[in-house]
Length: 562
Image 1 (cartoon, rainbow, N blue to C red):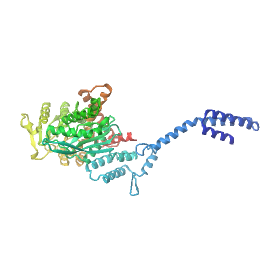
Image 2: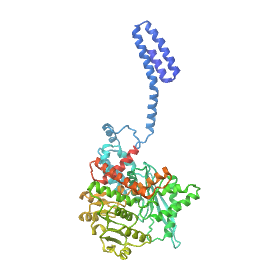
Image 3: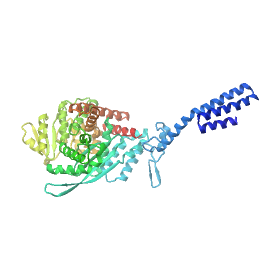
Image 4: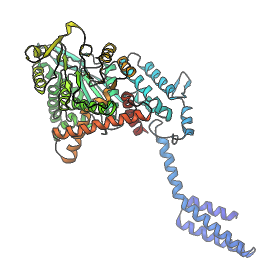
């Protein structure tokens, strides 16, 4: 038996077919000698057993090698991105993750017991690292507490959230340009490529004097979560400049866009990133940027300029109404599913008079709703009977020539009244409506506005502009039972449209028509609403679209990370 074991070990070490046969032959000889002095039947049984041992060991060799390969691969996987410590689905593994330190501070291990504990620790860490980025900190706090129940179920998600709080890269660059008087001017440009977990970066450009490191980081965070709600494999990015296009000539805007594109082009080359329209970056600015990019490509010897440009700018030129149309579709679905109300006939309050507000109003009219207000820097206009398509077109033409809504109301013969800014008050407090659509910018709708909307029996608020409502206004909506659609769920229409546009372009070699993109957009926005609603319902927050959007978006990213 000793000799048998030695021979078996030799088979394991060498693993050679010939060696296996020789070892078995040797075993057979030894076993025959053994059976001559013992019971023949018992020896035969031992011989069969020894042969089965050898053959079994030989069969296990490939499996052993596979196990070693798996173990080596496991060691190479990152702590956050991969399942190094086995599955976390069981309670045993959840307890193991809770015992691991989420942070190490001053030689002390910081751990958590519950999902709310983890959320509080993550918020504290964000505050410690970036105490002055107030907008970003508000976003982190909101999302952290909304996903706390998911972290309670799967503690490992806390490490994913910890990683997501840091963008992959944030680039700041100088944008020199010359004004009409020949003066050299300089602005700051930004591009944050926040997360490529789901795919290549994509996100809007905005020009506004309040753009800064903190605001661009907040917008990059929001864009990443927003993009993850769509069905397309798209990461999140954002960009822009503190350039103010207000009171600038076309020549000045053109020269600025050319300089901006020259600085940002290396960051978005080779289809690694892509643009969408945003605040103060409309069709005119996109046209200037696209022309400048084409010149850069040709100077660098790129043969297929059209292909590169189509990817970078997506559907922004073919379907600039995508975001506004998507807002209207989301509102249509939400009103029907949560309030059992058809959007047709409902009075809609809109702020703004740019592309976002006008396209939202246009689609609301097509759906049978009644948009009754629009606004700009001079004040707001109110049409008691509701605007018509002709009114929206006239306002669009007026805005192309830098006219104001005051001019529109003064020259219009219908029942349109103008309320100047000097009189005070806002559209939200002075006009009654069933649905509110803030379409201008972040934080435009505050606590007083939210209270006024509730007192005027408004049924729902849908953020068309990114984070158009302040945090306290959102709390008012939740406490008083108003249906609230957050911007990350309401306004990804341009992303949905661009995803479809590029999909048709790559598969069929043609550009999708506006009607095709519109039909796909309606389906896509309905799906986003339904996924958000299901996520809220799963965690016992039925009807809370804000929490549902945060959960659905974060969990899709986490699933990919894990």
